[in-house]
Length: 290
Image (cartoon, rainbow, N blue to C red):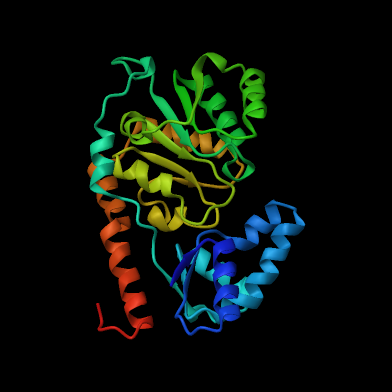
C-alpha cells in the first residue's frame, strides 16, 4: 500500500493497525511540517504533528519529496534520517510540452508587448503573493513590465486591495483558475515563486520544463534543490521584495538558455519517479528487484 499526504498517511497507518493485517505500507510526505505548523497557528496542525511523531515510525517505508522535507520530517518525528528516502515528485510528462505549445489568447503576449512576469498558486499565505506584488511594483518603477498571477483563493480581496494600493492595477491581471498554465509559462518572461514554505514546488519545475526563466525564494523546502543552489535561477530570502525585484530585473536583462532549464527539469520526470516508487514497493512486497 502507498499513501501520500499527511492526513491520508495517518489514516492509513491507523487502518493497518486496527485491521490487524500485515500489509506493507509506504507513506509519502509532501510538505515541510515544522514550517507549516509554525506559519498556521492552529491546534489542528499541532495535533497532526503529534500524530505524525506517534504513527510515522510504524510505516514500512517513508518517502519525502525533497531532501529538505526528509530532514525536517526526521527532526519533527525523531526518526533516524536514513529511514526517510527522497523521491522527487513526478512532474514532467510529454503532455506538458504539448500543452505548452497550445495557443494563448491574451493581449499581453502580443509581439512587442512589455515582458510578462508569472506567478501560479492558491491565494493563501503559504504562496506569499503580497511579496510578489511589492516586488513587481519595484520592477515596474524601473522598466515596463506586467504581472499575471494564475489561481484563486480566500486572499483574493487582500491581493486586489494591495494591487490598488501599489498603483499597478493597469499592469496586473488575476484571471483566476486556468486549465492550461503551461501555455502561460511557455510565453512568460520570468516565472516567480514567492512562497514562504513548500515541499517540492511543482510549478517551479513545470515552468523550467516550459523553458521559462525562473526566480524563487529560498524557502524550505525544494527550490534550492531544484535550482541546484542557484545555478538554474536566482534564490532570494523569503519575504524580501527588494531582493526579489533585483533578481527579476537581472533575469529580464540576461535570461538563461531555455534548453538548459528543460534539461534540468527532466530530472523530475514521471518515468524517473515511477521507477523509484516501483523499486520501493517491490522490495516491500518481497518481489524481484525492479
